[in-house]
Image (cartoon, rainbow, N blue to C red):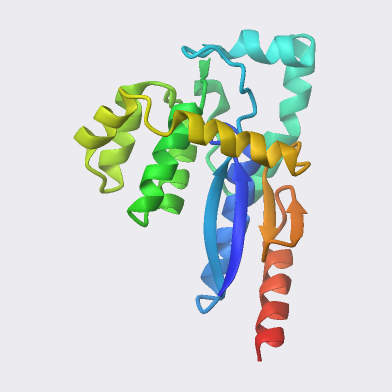
Length: 211
C-alpha cells in the first residue's frame, strides 16, 4: 500500500474539484494501492468562530465585488468541467472550519473519513449549508452513519481542538501554503486540483514499480 496524505479545507472549491478528479481515477483503478488520509488546513485560521457574511468576506479578500466575481469565474468553469453542482449563489456564510475538521478526524476513526469530506463539500458548495453550525455538522454525521449524539457531545467539548490546530500548523511548517496538496508516499508533493489522467498515470507507475 502507498500512503496518500491530502491537505484540504471543506470550504476550498479547488479541494472539492481535486477530490472529484482523484475519485474518478480511483474508480477506474479499483485495485489502486492508495491508503488515504485527510489532514486539516484552514484557509482562514483566524476566522471568527461564528464565521462571517460570505459576500463581505470575498469582497474584503479580493478587493471588491467585481474582483471577487472575477476570482471565482475559473472556479465555476472548472466546476462545470468536473461535473460538480457548485451552487455558489446559495452560500451566504463563510464559516470557521475547525469543527468541520474535527468531524473529519472523528469520521476517520470509524473508517468514514473520505465519506465525511465528500458530505461536507456537498453540504457547503451544493446545498449552501453553514458547515460551521453544530447542528448542521451533527446532521451530516448522521447522514454518513456516525452517531450524531456522540458527535454533538464532542463538538460541545474541546476535544481535539488543539490537536487539529497543531496539525494545521505542522502542514504550514512543511512549507504548504495552499490546498489541495497531495503527498504521495510521504515524499512527492502534488499541489492543486490535478486532472484524472494525471492520477491514472501516477497509479499506473506505482503499479509497475510494485510489479
